[in-house]
Length: 351
View 1 (cartoon, helix red, strand yellow):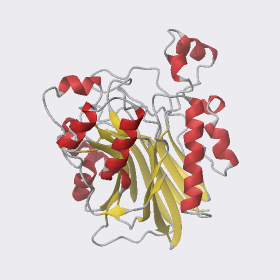
View 2 (cartoon, rainbow, N blue to C red):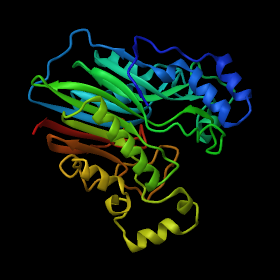
View 3 (cartoon, one colour):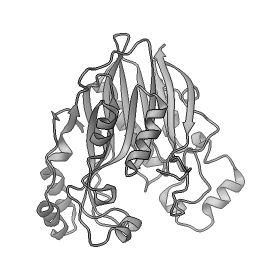
């Protein structure tokens, strides 16, 4: 499913609308009805920069899973320091109490004096994960949207949202929070020296495994080719390449045993994740785009998540020359984590 309808402001789900979904029977038809009814899931919010900047023959691009973008000032300082031409972002809140009920990507764009594109991955029916439910008990979300997008001073053309799945697997609360929606890839084109380049900001499912990631990859690549056939592409995302199926991770000792057999399994997951073979067959590379020796996870101030850490965030390119890849620590001025994911950055030019 590819959404190309754009708007200056998404239609925000009301408290009553979200409460009605929570009170409905927890069955597939309730999910489908809710998914169809939430207009925010079927449009892309766009605000162009006031004076779009023209890019030259190359551009610096950054991807970050910003973990709600809840640390407003520290996140802005970090991202300004990257001097990136385009920021590709996921895990962005709009109207979630855990991030101050703010429109986080719009606030970031305002701070940077740039434009943005935003698409909703989920309508959140509660306060978030178990940690957030405890921390914000008794409070309320003003809108309950969570998604991804782009921020840039350059023009972001032909924006679209690709929904990689609509399984409804988050609807019944089995993962300790209830949501309506599905994982997404956000698309937009930029121009390098007047040549079109497609950017994709991606967030894969965290509660499945390599087989499902392969399906999401196939869907994403097909939609990219349908949306922007034949042009260069840079994909950045949180791909959750943990190399294990969910059922395997639930068995005590499984991860430890697999790491004893291959200590670099989480750092170099290519042999365990068939999505890499598919990407290679479809013309994408990753070695030149990524700092291959750096894990992309870190522990938050609350002590979660805990090591061992791997490389689960990636950049993939087709038809581009990539250089100076970097992994940037997602910390504030005191060295405290502001996300459980590091930032990826790379310079791209036409091949």
